[in-house]
Image (cartoon, rainbow, N blue to C red; front, side, top):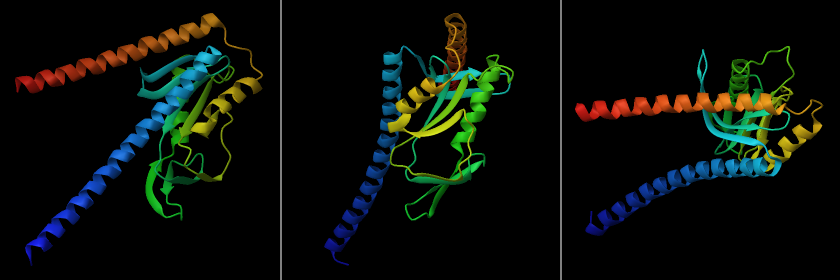
Amino acid sequence: MQWYHYLILVIAILLVIGGIVIYFIRKHNAVNNFKRATWKKLYRLAQAKDFYLLNKVYVNTELDTLHMDHLLVGDKYIYVIASRYYESDIQGDSYVTSKWEVVSKDKKLIREITNPVIYNEKRTICLAKFLGWNKQKSPMFISMVVINNSVECDIKNAAISPYSFIVHKKDLVKQIKKIEKDSKFSPFDEESIQKIINRIHRLSAEEKKQEDNLMKQEVDAKSNA
């Protein structure tokens, strides 16, 4: 093999590696850009409607630690919002099955995923109960999963809880406004809702403090090793 054959081979390998690196960088940036854009939409809505927005909330309950991307306190509901970016379309048998699939445009399986709707519903119910809600009280919490606009969601059985939603990012604000407008419930009592906000704030701060302490202990242990 001549020297220039080796050169061509090396260049080809470098191009392949470069292509793989660029793919992962673009994918990483796409996820971050999507999450940032979702936050901006919620922030602007909260500013315009005088809602209360909490981001990256961590709450320790008796059973589990709940991680929530966003908590939006509207006039009539508290929205537990999960932002989920998918590289292709998603499909599933129903909104209550545990697993869905990410598929290509020609419906070939790419990977299996946990059903984000039922996962967020469980998290929402757990938070609601932890904050004192029960089935005898009026509904207060809405579970909402936000997905990127490029994704088509094909679910065979379309039956879904009236307090659970999966929406494209472009429809997020419109959907929340519609829920608030269509609700027949009275707006929250300011004093009661402030107590809930303060409690979530306190619990989230305590969880963050615990995580920081654990991280510091790990760093100290490595330094002393």
